[in-house]
Length: 402
Image (tube, rainbow, N blue to C red; front, side):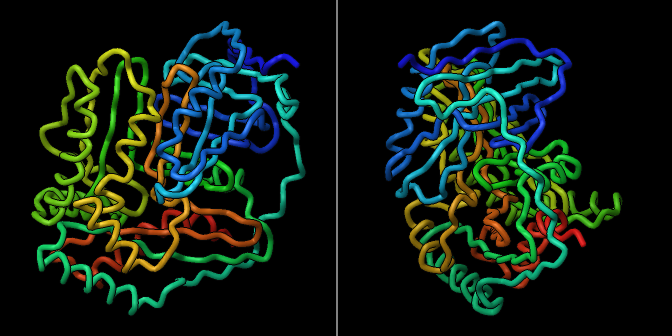
């Protein structure tokens, strides 16, 4: 039997295929939407040690490209677990439509191989949206606040600098959640976010973990958060307070330093913005710093960079080993794919990966979402609780649609 074939053609202004997407990732620079499934790539535990299998699998496709652009040809999408010690799965859609901000558009169709590929997507009946929904905090709020207080004690004792603790919310509806419906609402509400949908994990992340296009590498770490009110003057005051906050600036710099030092060995040059900016992300705003550079040759695959960077201090803490050990002790939850890398990679190693936050795991009538905070020595449990509520609101406002 012949191997799978990926044919890429220019698609111009042709309408997108009908039916729900099997995978999607969208950034201000580039959007890739996938339908159907040509292959599923299973990575054994621990998943970071087996990322090379993805390049090997993509290299087995016979490629015919009318359009050669990052994201053309066979593309693997993944939402990888936060826990590095477990297995992971990526999916190669049978049909991918790509487009750039400059107007370039293409379609890649995959056929052949093991017979699982299909050039045309199925078009199932769209399910009914939930009309009734319950939301509960999986862990009692007082217990979670006590964990934050315990973390501050450990940090004040000098055991570590920062730990990220998340709260888990469980949702139950009277009808199955529709990933396509959720993604469409996120596209409307957060048009500049990194929007994703992979195997039931759907979200709109503000944070770019890393991207590689040719030999250009970018990351935009975020750490330090304040709520938004919707009133421009009040939000500007809060943004100024965020920029002048010693707590938030220290928390932010820890992440910037780690990302810069991790990427630097691969680069001929690498620069970070001299000062952070404030980026709005729905009901909250964050300190963010763009890191950009040029990769030395041979350029690593974006997945190599993903494996080296995850988890950053923005989602785990610092120092890494001590923070992850304390996280496991105090958080009391399996994060699943929350705060793990989510994105895409092509056969040339190009790709874009977000930090998998502001996301929700959909499973029939049930859903679970997390909202995390960076805890440092002077963190206040009640203030951190309020921050988790503000972050969770960006998803609840999409899921709770009476």
